[in-house]
Image (tube, rainbow, N blue to C red; front, side, top):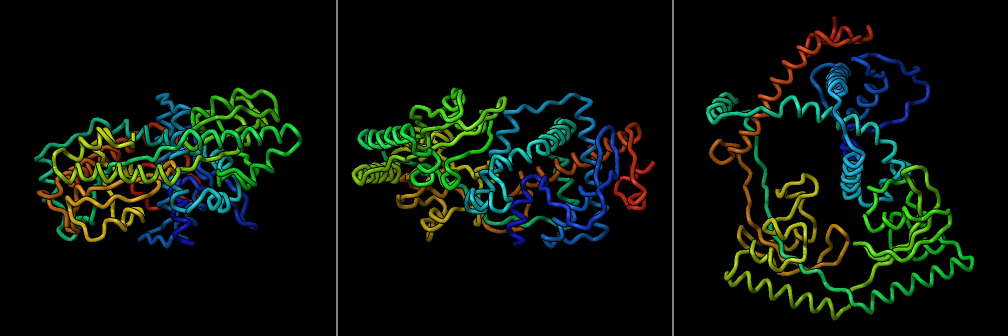
Length: 447
């Protein structure tokens, strides 16, 4: 259970827990500028940390409270500076986070089961809180964007780190890939479209769209709910789907057949509210034939032989031949969806790749194997281990970038502390008497 709560906590520390029965009525415990902090804000985070087994050497509630004061101080400045976050940025951030949580928990159904609400409702609940967090992060970034360090500062910083406090660098990997996506025959696509036309005819003759979705839709997240997606905005949907869904005008109206990167759909409008719509859909995914898989296997093996012959670099081969658009132009380097970098720790490697890496060293290339990509498509690929680091204590020679980042972070932290001290003097701050006795790191909160 702790692991599950920890995963959901990453939703940017904006999880909201129901207030237990019998608790005192919530109250305002601080005002920073025009922004307030509620008692429940502290209590909810406190319960979160306790459920995760967090140990803090001091008063944890006071620490949480000061972190919230700092966040509201940044938010107040962001409002004064008229910093803006667009709807598209919020939607993209929400979608990215939801995709990550789904990958960690196992499915959209499990995430919905945990929260007791649909994905669309989860997004709606967290939207305002996420926007506030993004404003805070952007303000903090603005305050430190010009921070730079010189080589001499980095060396001095490294020399001042106690030897027993130097970070331990775990094993990390970087991988390059070449991907072949098996083709889907036109015959298979036509067969799928014909099934959807048949569904449309049955709906026209009185069969419920939702009943067909439950029985036949291949979207596991919505099929059990009769294909219903819940209220979503245009940017929450893939473009081809959104373009057709938002053209539907009357509740009950069924769209033409729509092709997306996930397959073929028909869509039924349930309701529209301003820029949000609630629709049902039925998704059918064309299947790759055995013959096409054989062709893909021959092609991927041929490409692997070309790379093994060393007549072309892996990066050039990826650029020329890989079907994966996201990696072909960056040397074939696989992106870690958790960190948006091309570095993986051992526990971040997916099962299919981990199995094919057994016994290989840096520079080795896996055999070709079948797996799924991020769009749930069957693909064939092979992978090269381009880099691997062994666990070690960081040194300035082997881990200069890590030490540099630590030095920059330290300098940014000092600059932020100075900013907080200055802003505390000329910002309206009022704190409830129950927290005045806290031993704050920054002493200017209490006036």
